[in-house]
Length: 312
Image (cartoon, rainbow, N blue to C red):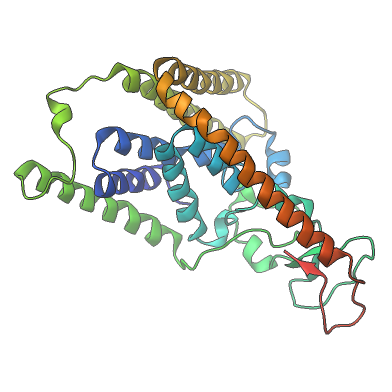
């Protein structure tokens, strides 16, 4: 039982209402909470290729993607983070969350198999993941996400939730109830959790137009994607009409970004001014990681069971 679309969106809405209160922040958090699930099998690959690559909960559920969305808008980035964080708490049935994708894909092997038995090490490979995934976990994965027969290193984060269905429903109804209370308190004047001034001035074209276009593109992508996915479960024949609609939805989302840039030039200039600092931070992180790996991998590969190679 995966975390459902309404649950992610509702969590974004309640966090926006609780901590920010502005309608723009609430809607952007809701939209950002939907974005990571764009890495489902909707139009990216054939069903088998998608299954083998294990793109879902990886391609758009990682820190690199979150950083890119954050640069577009901080509230979008926070919403996307809430989605990924929530998914990382759910069960192994949904394949967990691969926070460090695509860097984790560079490491092909593990030190131990799923039983804890030490595997034979390759002298040419200095960096390993700790352990291969447990078959009992991958066997419980939904059919459209189940990996192939080849054993894979454990690259994903699985959460403590024992019942995905109860967890999903608890977050959904709990978030909805809390948001309704925040709205009620604001309307009655007990405490102004949510800014209601938008009732008097409901239109802000520079925000509304890009947001509506983006939301339409995301919703279109999910709706036609779910319809096509259910068809593929019965027959593995790709739907050309869906493929066309998928690429149209991507075009709509891209056009919303272009509209946002055109209609909000000051926000764009503010983001651009941050780039030198961002680049310096990335360069520093890359340098430190490179030095650490060089130091670690320059040591002789261990040949006994008392020490391990570099494990990530």
